[in-house]
Amino acid sequence: MKDVNVILAEQLGLGRIHLCDCNAVHLSVGPVTLNLESTAFLQLATMICNAADQLTAIREARQSPEALFEMLASASNGLTH
Image (tube, rainbow, N blue to C red; front, top):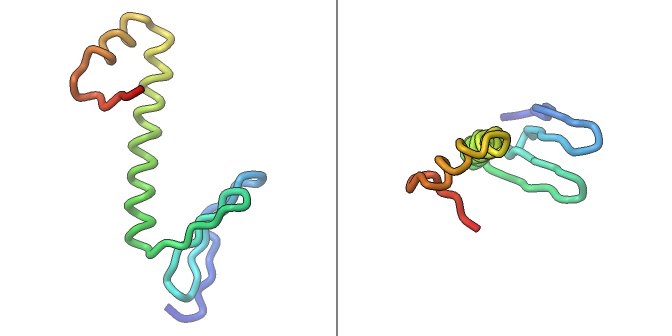
């Protein structure tokens, strides 16, 4: 990729993600920047989406004690303390 320098996403006050001509994805959050190969970035994005889904389920379950107990009793939920 030549002459590529594209901002893929940006959130003011949080950070940004951009693709540069070296084919790396630069993920900057505050003062921290991760420089990732594009495939690694896509894997990280999938992992974060999965974590966000889990977090959403947990937050929703906290509003219903019965649902929270069901989630905690599930052997495949992956919850740890």
